Image 1 (cartoon, rainbow, N blue to C red):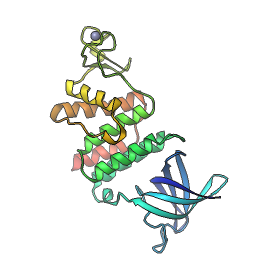
Image 2 (image 1 turned 60 degrees about the horizontal axis):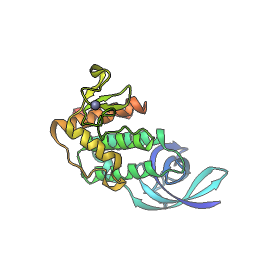
Image 3 (image 1 turned 45 degrees about the vertical axis):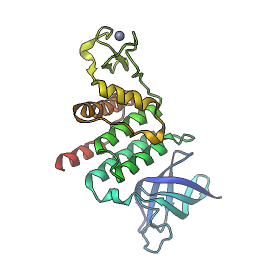
Image 4 (image 1 turned 90 degrees about the vertical axis):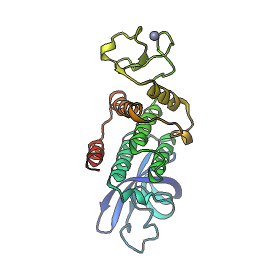
Amino acid sequence: MNRTVNGIVIREKPLGEKGKLLYVLTQYEGVIAVKATGAKNISASYLKSAQLFAYSELNIYDKNKHFTLTEAKLIESFYDLRKDVSDFALASYICELALLTAVPSDDGILRLVLNCLYALSKNLSGRDTIKAVFEYRLCLCLGLEPDFSGCTICGEKGNLFDFEESALFCAECAPDAERCISLDEKAVEALNYLNTCPPGKILSFSIKGEPEAAFCRFCEDYLINAADLKPATLDYYKQTIKDD
Ligand SMILES: [Zn+2]
C-alpha cells in the first residue's frame, strides 16, 4: 500500500552501500523506520529529504509495517543546523529525546521539535533557552506538569521547588526547605507561562541574566529527575558549548 506521511528525519543509519535507514518522527504514528535504498545516489529524487533534520511529505510503500521511501516533497531542510557544531549538537539532543519519547497518535512532540529547530535555525532565542524550553515542554507532553501558579499548600507566591514532591512551596510551607532548590521569581513566572502558552508561543517570553541561567538549570534537572531522561547527546552538547 502506498501512502503519504509528514515527518522529520531524527536519526539515520547506513543501509547497504547506497541506502539509509531513516527514523522519521511522524505526525500521527510516532517514530517509524523507513528504508531509503538509493539515499546516497546523487540522482535520487528524494535526496534532500533523506537527510538528518529534513522535514518532508513522504510517500512510502507500506508492506505490513515495513516502510520504503518512494518519493518525497521537502518542506524544510534545517540544513544550516549542520554548519555550526553547537547547533548540530543541540538539534541532535532534541532529536534523541524525541526518539526516546514519541508515541503514536499525538503530534505534540513533532510540533515541539519543529518549533525548536526553527527557532534555533533562525536564532530567535539563545541556544540554552531553546534547549530549556524544549526540555520543559517535552515533560508537559509526557504528562509531567508541576503547578507554578503558587505554593502548592497555601497558594501564596513560592520559589522553592521540591523534586521529591514535584511541587512548588513557599518558605513557610516547604516540608524540607534544605532539599528544595530555590528558583528566582522570574524563572517561576517563565515556567508558569510555559504551562499554558500555545505551541507557537513557547519562546514569546523574556528572561535574562541569572534568572535565565536558573531557569535553564531547572529545566534540565526537571527532565532528568521527573522524566528520568538523560540522553548521551547532552554531554556532547555541553562539550561543544565549552569549546565555543
Ligand atoms: Zn505556602
